[in-house]
Each structure stands twice: as C-alpha cells, then as structure tokens.
Image (cartoon, rainbow, N blue to C red; front, top):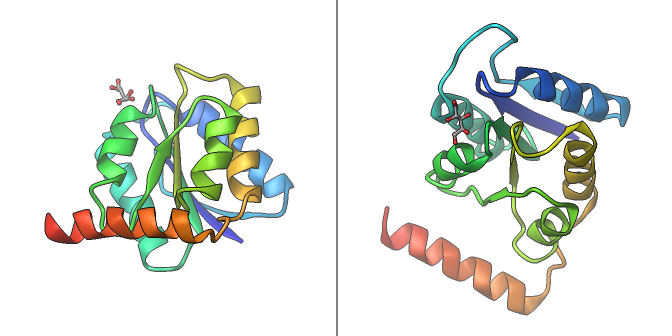
Length: 149
Ligand code: RB5
C-alpha cells in the first residue's frame, strides 16, 4: 500500500520517524513534506498529500503539523478528503471504521513518537466497516460538500 505523508516545519523529525516506522511495516511512503531545518506552510503540504490521495496514487495520507489542526482544516477543503485529527488510538480506529477517513492528521506538539506510531498503526490497519448506516452518513457529508462546492 502507498501512503503519502506531509508535514510543516513543526514536525519534520516526527514525520521521519513515522515514515521509517511505516516503511518497516512494508508500506511505500511518498514524502511531500519539508525536511529538518526547512520552513513550510501546512496548507501547501496538506494540498500536496491530498492530491496524491484523490488521484488514487496513494491509498491514504498522513499530515503532521504542530497541532494537527491546521492540516485537518486544509485537507478537509479538498473534495473527496475526509481528514481526521486524532491524538489517541480509539479515534484513529473509528475514523476508519465509521467515517472511512482517508487522511490522518496529528500534532508533533501534542503527541510523542509512541502515540504517533499507535495512531498510524490503527489508521492503516482498520478497514471501513461498510455498514449501511455509516455509508449513509458519509454520503450526507459528500452531499454537503457538493452543495457547497
Ligand atoms: C506552525 O507554527 C503551527 O501553527 C502549525 O504547525 C500548526 O500547528 C497549525 O495548525
């Protein structure tokens, strides 16, 4: 599975650690973020990662900034993206199971490396349940997106 990852200047070290963790697990990781010592704006990284997801090149995206919040705001502006900002594993799992989220966001100033690994492990290993009631609600999110396009 191919995963796109992105970060701003608040998170290059955590991005590299998460990237190595995912590669160890056999994922191919496309890095769209900035390197240690560089500065970059989170909306740019969010847009680049989301483009990889909406094009189908990557199955999912991971975005890390200081809080995860700016990344999630930007990512959720992209049609077809459902970005979940999480700081604990339960939400990361339910974001997949119930919401079929395709982008995970978190903050390098909020979570440490261990929690970040837990988040990506839960997100990448949990399938969407496919339940009719969850699909109906996701379809309603898409309808809101289309109405406001
Ligand atoms: C950058 O300093 C910081 O604002 C950003 O990383 C993020 O936390 C925004 O939501």
